[in-house]
Image (tube, rainbow, N blue to C red; front, side):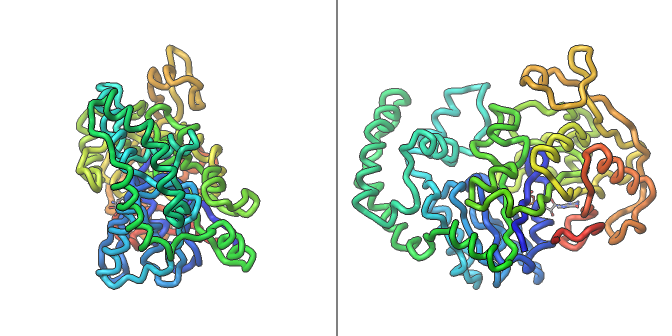
Length: 429
Ligand code: GDP
């Protein structure tokens, strides 16, 4: 069995949990490859228990799945320990967790800087979660990061931290008028985390290679989504890592040739949180309707999500960029009851028709959607389990997404419940 990548095909919150539910128990390993505790997914177990996870890979609740935090993830040790404790309290065994020794750690200076820098950007702010993720990736690139493996050597930890705080404290105090951080206190705090995290820190690269060599299935799980990719998304309104499929290789050490499937998840419409361009955004009652029926509010923040129609330019871009072999279209049920359902098939930019994602950010800001109107349907879809159960117009809508995006739609979500899906093709090879 090969490696399978799971990516969000839009701006996040596509309902990736649906896919991990469908694959739960069928893969031996689930590995997170990017982002930090800015992600969030809700897992509902077969007995109806609800778990909110931020850092832990989604396989955490499948007792036979090894869960891995890859080298591409940035780890806030306190958040991770809280999640471990929360799961343990509810009787979930997390001894199957492995953390890459190369994963970078989020340190107190990252959180402190994240908050003050956003404040200084004013209206140009990116809308980060303020959890230190961007600054931690910044230090990784600047080669002054502190990694999970540094927790295993108190001398090295102290040395690296003292060095980095020499500069960070200057910035905190002199630029932002904040208090300096005390290196000794931070070392003590992190050594306490080290005590507890030591058993989980491993050479995950080799563990994953061996699993693949034994023929086990490895699910590489992305956080955030394609349009938030640092290199390929709507920069600068993006996340600070690479959630796209190529990032899965970098963030785990699994080679591209081991990947046999890339599953992309997209809603039947579009949402976005935070700032940045969003061509099909609706500002009227229809947008409010999508938000209300789709329950489009942030899971942790409660913030309203921006809502709009399905954007096939984005879908096509995501398919080509990630090499998506299977699309999962979630929340088709939210579109029920509309007379007509528009799909954005291209953009008009400064009087010209464009079918691809424009090269410049300015052009994307000017993009006006060109819509094709499909017939709507009235029926409640939530009982549909096969394609034949869907009204003809809903089937046609899915087929049109398939044609426009350039890849097959394998699963269609028809309700929030974990089994509320129409499965057209099995997601496992
Ligand atoms: P993620 O951020 O991409 O991991 O998204 P989640 O898996 O947390 O899903 C977001 C929400 O969408 C959850 O509350 C799901 O119950 C809901 N959801 C997922 N699929 C569907 C669907 O097909 N229809 C409806 N109505 N809700 C869905």
